[in-house]
Image (cartoon, rainbow, N blue to C red; front, side, top):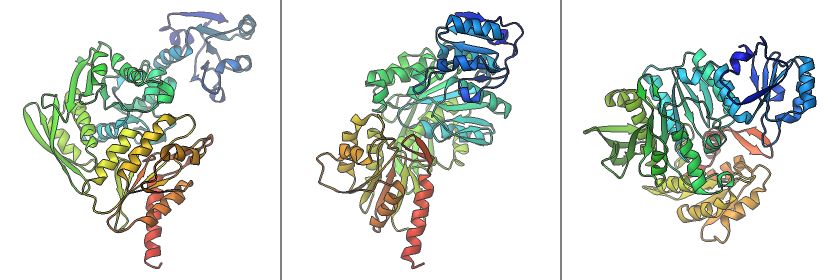
Length: 506
């Protein structure tokens, strides 16, 4: 793309160094380790590295364009002498989103883009939408916590919602792979930091808001404001003749904030209010599934999904409204396609290797999610309820730890504390902040998570239920600064197989 075409959408900038002329921009980068000859570099001030510190070195490279927030006269003169162009902008974060949208041919506007935000339920809801759409004949892209999916290709997830440049590149890759739809998780960090700027969202979903990330947002009101930015971003425009759509969990105390943030078309879902757009009732908790009745547009529909947890009824309701109201499928078509849905990896997933107790892996790591999961597992449980749990370290909202401990000691019969993503924080310190004064239940600390899983399984008796909480389908552990490959589902499965071999004398 010609540099002059690339920068055409920008409004407030100064051109330093050499004129743009007919320079061709071959690539965009915000990482000094990933620059390409003839490319443009966007200097971002990150938590660990400021791209502006590399300007002098980058001027000596084969880049054609640098986008910066500050530049010295000496650097401008050097750029002019070397034939390099520099764009001086108010915010490289904002410029990055605009330039990426332009460079990748406004890819997000060519996709049906669904974004889901909320403390809990984002992964389950996006996975439901993506997989049911696939069953209905679509080719989808997915960006979320577990992985990024571009058509048939699965890529590792670095962040739940990556930076704007990566987002727009992924949209372009999805189009190239024949995708019609992008279904994404919109984290509060991403919304607050502008990672979704110029992502042309068509349907936005709010699942819930409970305590999390207050190390970053400081207060629940600021956390709610960050979430509401997704709905403000829907704007007032039509997409292919349709109004943008906001889907809101009416039962959440922050629902009105999300509703007020947007002028888009609105749909609500509820387990409480029969007057909501979609209402669910008569929920039956089966051995490994949920059955419930949906009341929608004066008709009732019986649905069964292969998941545990009443909250997953709500996640399905959000997906159902997206598929019927935004995509235009009939309730019957959606429910029929739902029959192929197999659940979500690491979300209330039962691991069965023939043992005489129940082993469940779930991502629950916030107070609300942990309470919901433990409460759900206590219903109909004939034996003891054991819980294995850790908590992320390294300035990750440590103020939530006392409440997490209270919930564990209230609802579990036995607790095995271990590492989650401890980063640089001692596991023993993290656990002490959860245990505090509690002595009423038996608990253990096994720092190595794999060893803790084996220890927990050895405590189990016939009829017991063990919850392995916190990691779910996450494919790494953060130890220090290192992201170590780790698959809880595989570890639990292998430990159960080992336990069975030992018990059978093999």
